[in-house]
Amino acid sequence: MPTYFVAWWNLENLFDEEDAEALGRRPEKVARALGNSVSGWTPELRDRKIAQLATVVAGMNDGAGPDLLGVCEVENRFVVERLRDQVNATLPAPRRYEIVHADTDDARGIDVAFLYDAELFTVPDPREESVFFHVVMRRNATREIVQVTFVTAAGGRRLVVLGNHWPSRSGGRLESAGYRAIAGETLGYFHQRVVDILGAGTPVLVMGDFNDEPSDTSLVQHALSTRQSAKVLNARGRPLLWNLMWPAGGIPDGTFYFDNEPNVLDQILVNEPLIEPGAPWHVDAGSARIHKHPAMVDDGDYPKPVAFGGMGKPVDRDGFSDHFPVTAVLTETDPA
Image (tube, rainbow, N blue to C red):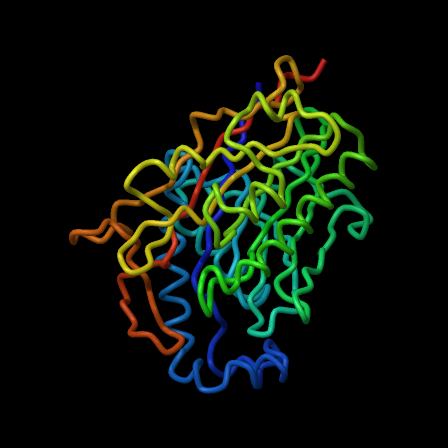
């Protein structure tokens, strides 16, 4: 039975070089929004950060790299391509990664993207019917939810993946909560649409940086996620999502640290067809975890991620990102 190692990672402001606008890789609107924050962000620094990130990605899945990786806080397709190429240069056996990149309407130009092994998955043509960018409106357009329908090479089965980067807690967690509630409603709506259009047996994998904890209202009441698989299996009416990262909220750990407090902001959720006994797909719930590459962990009193910095923050050339990745394993039954 084929297994698939999936992962999500917020790459913390993986921006192109400071002169990207002159090179045609940064829209003038984004350049205005960024202002002087990209000053000093040289091609060498960009590539050093990408090399650091690639060591973590290549180390996933026992050193074989992920089969499917969702990322956020990337500026453009160019930096995602460089990351892909660097991951392959780091892996002992390169993989045929292809990219789905969402050029979103975020004011700072940070996007969501996927790397996927084209030997394992395809994105059917025409792509317009397989890739959707769902705009989240909060007074103006913000980071979009990216929906991709992948089809497995082994069994020819669909796997719908929704990549999320919800509005930040800037201005205060409670003050900004309404924005994430809107994002949660948007996710819940399009989960329902997938089920309505593609059928109730369609597996849906949700990954992202939600900027809220698993128990927060945006995820529980608006996105309709729960800590209990039984509730998902017994749901009537709107479909629910099982949040695999909920147990991580009960341990002294997190994917992101604010004021040295751990927060589980990065999460993986699944719908009923990924947990129903006897279904063609199954998630290994015990595989869901925070991925901690040893070099990423601060050796001080608080085991937070070692960030690379930049964009107005001090640069640590031995750093990575201010978020840890999260990972899980899916299994597809052998085709009949």
